Amino acid sequence: MFDTFFGLPMHPLIVHATEVVVPTAALVLLIAAFWPRFRRWAKLLPLGLTLAALVLVPLSTESGEALEKRVSESTLVETHADLAEGLLPWVIGMVVVAAILFWWNLKKAPAKRAPKWVAIVIMVAALGASSGTVVQAILIGHSGATAVWSEEMGTPAQ
Image (cartoon, rainbow, N blue to C red; front, top):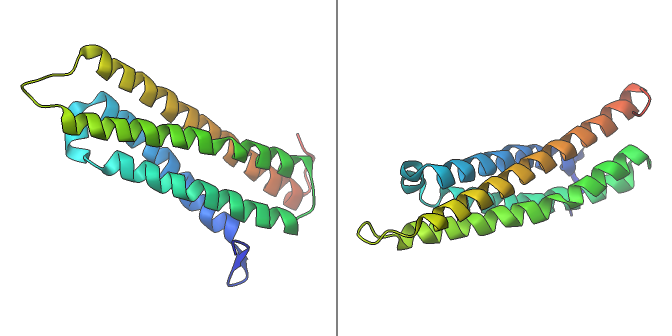
């Protein structure tokens, strides 16, 4: 199902969408956690973007597994696949933080302010989930590019 689209492998098509949405979701979540005015303006945006990332990551993984069956086995491809398996937990963490942030923003009445520690916990959780997600996405993208270009260009694996 996630193998080809009009003869082109689906994986590069889906992955490019994933590599745009995932870091964007991380950045928007981080800004929303640290900047109340942006959070009020953004409303559902952080949650929506993290949910889009949550949909795209498994699609990328499935299409990657289909592509992996078509290409020759290599340690670079295996490394890329192993790293890709680690992205979903980070994205789930972002979704949880975005949901809590959205709920907290809805429940926070101007007359009744939440304790300061709640905001700090949300900021720390957003920072952890966002930075972990972005680092993992960069590692995955770099390993994928290395696997593609080292094989196609005939350069030795590093």
